[in-house]
Length: 153
Image 1 (cartoon, rainbow, N blue to C red):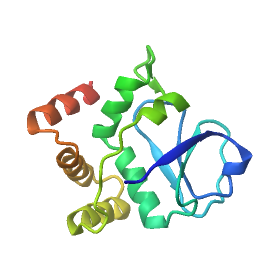
Image 2: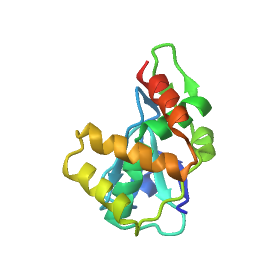
Image 3: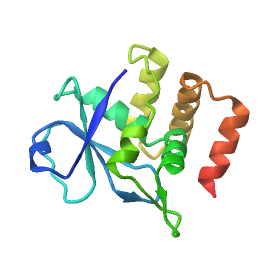
Image 4: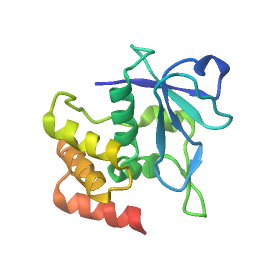
């Protein structure tokens, strides 16, 4: 299982491959910096603990996983909710996030990630990723329905 640590907008993080997370957001939005050449002024960088140069496919896959409704539900439960409906993630919140176990050799998972990478606006591919993660997290259909309706409101 991948482990990440969060850094608050530090210069030392700029040259590492990383996943960006905004500090305040309306929905789960993560972005991968696969070359280690993008900097940011606000938010956090998720840097792989054991491999500071995680390969591009893994970084992208994790950024997609972290951007799903299933994961957003978790963030909303542990983060600071704002009156606007947005939520704020601090380092302490990020450290509490439970990452699902993912088999990166699973062809089904790879196909879903490829579909999202090819067309990030394809809602069906995102839904397939949510369903895939539900199985990994032992979330049943009833719970998924509740989570989806909670996120949509």
